[in-house]
Image (cartoon, rainbow, N blue to C red):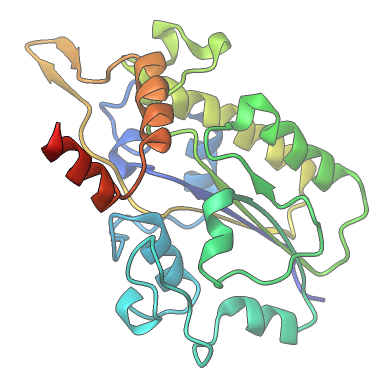
Length: 252
């Protein structure tokens, strides 16, 4: 009998923030998985961008060999085989929960569930976590199943869930969110049996946002509200300024 597979990708997940004696996050569930499972301590991402990392993760090729080179105007080459195709050929039913940008590159298959997309700025505590648990406990997943989930909680902008916004969960925003992720991983573990293969990985790491100097933590994160406002404003700026606009500016 084939094992079910739950594949969790945590965007921008730094290894030193969950497996390090100096970390300040609380990760009892991840710690237990490391003790009882397999940890790849020298895993290296092929890219610092999600789309290229995805393309390599699911094809075993460098991104430039898949046709996906950036977030714009690139799609998977039709002759490149993905693990989704292999799983499907082996009678796995495919389920997904992915951010909206995933639909642009032709990498992912047609999932069994139609509600596989969510907004980029949504995180686990805003409904995604409950959505995952509901699917796992519904009994409607057709076995053997493969369920891929990509979460954005650690991606810019960092928004700490209110019930984890306390120093006991971490010295900075990033590590507090890691503690919240561990909470949801514990919930997921309660919904899957021991025969289910649980894979947790990152697509890539992220830039260092805090340092400890003489026992004092210096956090470089700007407020999450400022980041959200900046991000939303950038979406309203046109990508191209019409030439006629520049001519009008010159004539005034």
